Image (tube, rainbow, N blue to C red; front, side, top):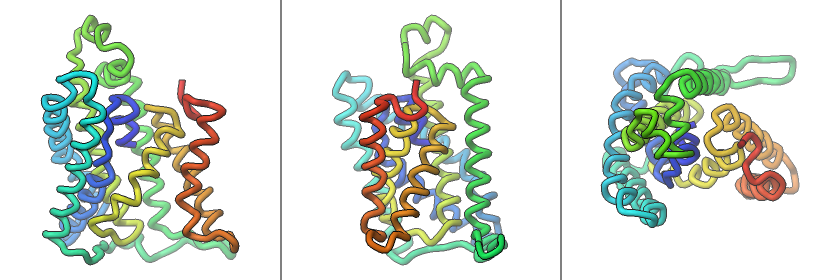
Length: 267
């Protein structure tokens, strides 16, 4: 969801987004040691991560975007550097061992006949749906939300409407980073995390955003479900297995872009 904002709406090559998500997981781990529920911890982390995102975009803007058309290429190197700094910092602070959290809904499951569904996955799914609703309403019902959608289309026209494109992008990048913090809390609810876990999600997250259609909130959830179910089918297939699962994301991406270049839900 956060990458759909930063990359889909703002056109910022934010390859450090999964690393920020993992950072959110470790911050959640620290807060749960104080007795907080992981979901509560994730919500509490959103304001400081929002400020972090605003500062990160300002640095990116002053160093790269402000200087011209090569900002995208240079920005990729910048955000790869940010991701590396976060990963190394986590290793120095926590070591390479996996970390996990505890909660009443972790380790329990709901049974429907012969089918058992882990309760933690239902909780994470509910939070994802709630965040989708909140972001969709924010982008469609508020002036700032509509300005965020407009800044990717026509910056001069946005200025005529009385909005500063740079401030709007900075605000939106803060939102994307805050959402990444909550995603990190959901990630550590699903299972243990480790400092280099962001590498697993770089390709998948970009595939989900592009497959959905850049900037589509509801499309992002649908695309995530499509890829998740497809990978699960590959995982349980006797002739394929886990090694083939990552290939599913990019195969589906290529097939969809070949038929519908704007993505499944893009306009």
